[in-house]
Length: 259
Image (tube, rainbow, N blue to C red; front, top):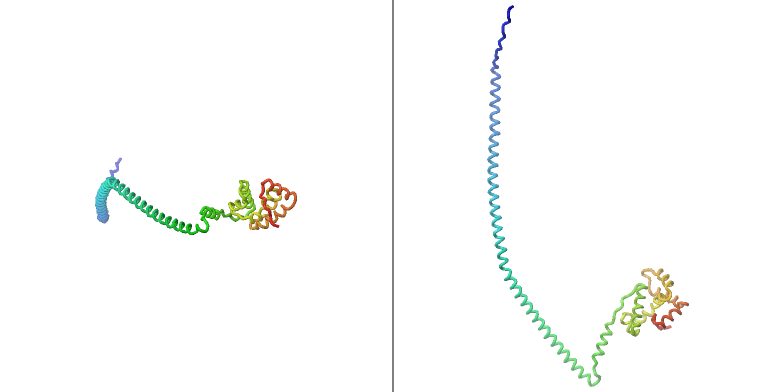
């Protein structure tokens, strides 16, 4: 049998135009790579310079910190040394203030003594001139001044306030004071007590009737009208007899009303 001849693989050569294209691509890629390398080098050099700058700045900050520390310690030490001197100065100034205060007191005292001397001399001259006619009694004058300084009563607007004032006068009377003295101590006159006494008398002798009138009393209503209504009820029996009995026992003020 006839054998088949062996096939030989023959390597084909690339076309010349293909080789030219590959060379062109390599030459085109080479400049772009070089550009990127140059950029990276520039960036590295910039970062190195930045690091150097920051290191220098840190050194400057550390030096400034050390300087401030030293200046602070020096300032504190000098302050501690100067503190006792200041306290001494303060004590000196306080002594000066005390001396000035004493001088002012002395001046005021001297002025006061002069005024007292002048007033006493004028008083002696007036007393000597009045000795021929009537003797002067300064104690009575002082009592008159005290009587002028009697308590001023507050204005009342509610029946409860009227009753409280009435009971206050009654308390002074129970302690032995006269009616005039009790009125002055409470800062009220006789007419006011007389006009408003019916309110307290009705409240003491007929609480139910008083509470009914009080419930009808409104804010802004006149106390004189309320007192007139209470007075009408006080003139009726058995309230009238109860009021007279309590006046005899000293539980109410015995006021003689003018007809």
